[in-house]
Length: 424
Image (tube, rainbow, N blue to C red; front, top):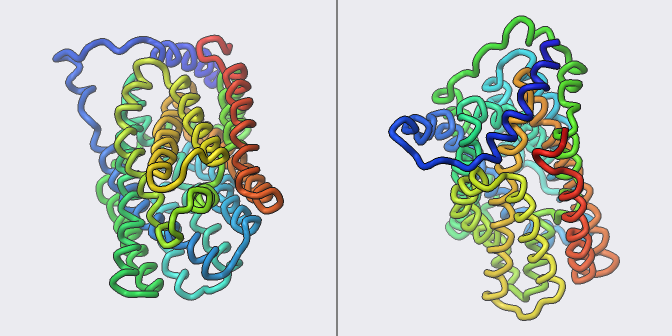
């Protein structure tokens, strides 16, 4: 009965809150206008953790492609592993956070696990071993992501969630911007010093663990009735049309998303960018993402988060088509594609969580966020593998053409599947 009441109240109320225009700020809105300390602290944790992760990510494609000589299919498989390894652990992490009321503890465990993998990287030197460590790192990410987003949701009023997630993602992306720069600087100072880069990466990740332990408040304890709910009951509370349709639509779009490593390698080769600059290409995406995340989040709060989410995939569709047709090459073309890719992330990453979070009943909110993230991650893992296989057998141009054209069909399908305010 408790969960049926939550289903009856949350979706309609929060969908209406999202759709309603935001009134101009008044003196009474001052408290809402402030950024909660929890959001800033979690943003700082994500900043240093993402800097740590992107140091490694920036090095891996060049190391794998030009050091170990892996092909497109192997790169696509590793990209798929990198994206999908989080999936199976997201729901477990989300359920544990809901069941015991310890979102902060579960998130901290995930950050700590990812940090420890950085210490093991200097000891391995083969693609399978690197893949195993990437898997463990992604498990840590899977465990922490939904509890972290639930902590943000609990700290912010529903009408401001787009802005709050935008601020968090902007700080997170600042770390993604700094990571490749730090890696580039370390390798410039210590040529071939991959072990040194991995050690610096570990130190940054450890700093993130310290920040979340010291500065993020614990989430409110659940009631005895909420703690008694099992996984089946929590998942059952998520079976509303709006949640099901949103999850299905997000997964459909995720299936037509190119993995990051394959995307940057494809960009470098299609646009004739020097191979030595490959680790720096994610910086362009991160810079656009960081700059656009907050304005896009505010815009999503005003005009609707789902339309902004779909528009983000339009930007990705444009990037894929450009890399298929290649009307011109060089740095101008590279900048255009990176801008489109950065806008894709700014309009999709936090915006989807801001859209779905108010629709989820409180006792299953973290589990629900994990379910949506899991569906999206599994779909993106399949997309990354499919792109790698297509590029291996048909070439990069064919792969980008297929994903560009099919993503347009997926956009139309997603728009028909999920219509906020009409799903009931």
